[in-house]
Image (cartoon, rainbow, N blue to C red; front, side, top):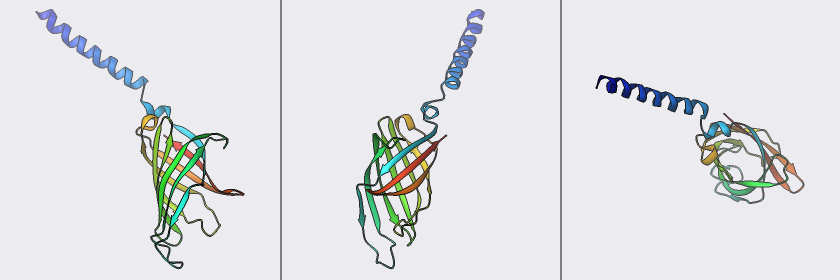
Length: 160
C-alpha cells in the first residue's frame, strides 16, 4: 500500500510536467501568425452616407466591402469589411475586419480624412481575431495610394 501512495504522486507530477512541456513547445496559433504581412485593399465598393453638411462633416460615414490582395498586389487573398464615421472635419473613427481563408482579424482606430487629397499613414489597433489569428495582438499601418483606377490602401499588418 505504501508503494501505491508513492507511485500515484510520481505519475501525476510526470503527467503535469509533460503537459507543461507540450504547451511551452507549441505556444498556439498566434505565434504562427506573428510577424509582418503586407496586403493591398482596392477601394472599389465604398459607399458614403451623408448626414452632416458641407461645412460640418460630423456624422457622415462610409461602409465598404473591398477585395484584399497579396503583397505583390496580384492575387486576391480575401476581403476587407467595415465602417468609418466622421468625428470631425478631418478625422474618422474606423472599425473593420480583414477576412482571410484561415481566419479574420478585427481592427479599429482613427483615420485622417482623405477627401482633401493629402494622405498620411494611419495606424490601427488589432483587437483580435479568429482561426489562425485567434488572440492576435498588434497594429496595422495603412498607407493611402491614389492610382489611375481609384484609391488603394497598402496594409502593413504587424502581429506579435
